[in-house]
Length: 497
Ligand code: NG6
Ligand code: CA
Image: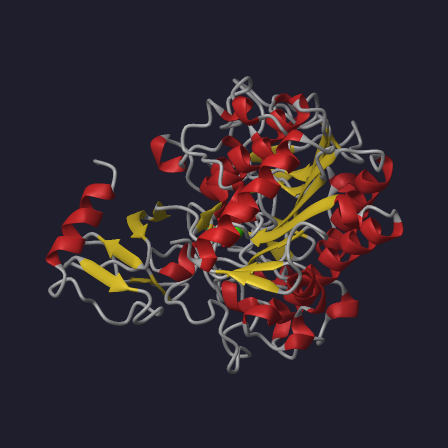
């Protein structure tokens, strides 16, 4: 007997097969927010006024309720996104300092590299946070290897995060606007003599840290790491979203003949949250909410550029985030006090840094008019690590994904044609947890239950935890004792330490 769902699924596969064989592949725009939680967007339960453009994507496309980053922090998630390899397989993929060496080995298979080889023009705009340079790195000279050595044709980035030095933009292999007479010096091991720090000179600060972030002072905000010089090249936090958005739109306009792949990685809504004055007060939730409004504006500008250039119909847009939400991530920006009834992780427990679902389950929207059903939703279990193989398949270059060890072709799930997606997913938040269908297992550990400064529940417990997410999506009922067989099975799914 053919059940309706398998019939639909079979039809979907038939359509897919023809798409793979036939027409020119679409442009791909990946809008990648920073620290944006599942519940931070209107289509997942936040107030609609917060994110009209994200919600527009939901109305015109497909909304995932169970899509994940590989990890609950930035660097590992981005490493997996670009390489198709789970980051916990490789040492040195934790949150990187701003002077770290490039951790994506040039020459290896990457998402942009695969698409470039398939005829795409590839560009990255925004947050990088995967390290730059090889044996040595001179911020005043040629900054390489970097994005251009791992698959991107064009690059306009910040090296690490908004709260880490160096606070400059890098276009291609050069710091933008650098005055050679005022060279940049960056160090993370010790302070630079004569330079004020947040710790010693709080009177110079306009945004104060709540924890950490007490080193170099750049434009009245103390950061992680030390830097001196490069005055003419320093970014303005207030115009960062404008700058990145302008670069993203310019990339689209320049490459509109297509096909192109744009990886637009915003700084919003990471700390320090210093949105442009025109967004200040717009959310009623203080700087964190205003940064969400600013992120949404950036996404809207990209959608508008696609519309204005007649590209919307032939562009696959994906909007997602690099890890779950965090409220107080180190600056006194009143994010906790002004939260009200807003729930950044939606119905899920935990957030950034956590093994609970809030750590890796993020907003994930896909729009491709004519191919992806407007206003649809899916419960498919999807991981960003699969974007490499899935988009390679889309581009007719499936074979190029062969050396991306953990990336699987789930294009059918990505387009809403397979309701299941991944069978097993490993989630990283400090240690590892595992998902199999609606089951979630977190092994016993002695780690702290909460991240002290951010107040995030980390998911650590001295006894094993098993959750049935259909029963309680918020991981509130540990059913380990009731289902020893399920527990054993999921334990076996976890990689050996
Ligand atoms: C932490 C920072 C946090 C943030 C995070 C990385 C402190 C006290 N906290 O170490 O503010 O920068 O690293 O965030 O320094 S991520 O989104 O790039 O992973
Ligand atoms: Ca992040």
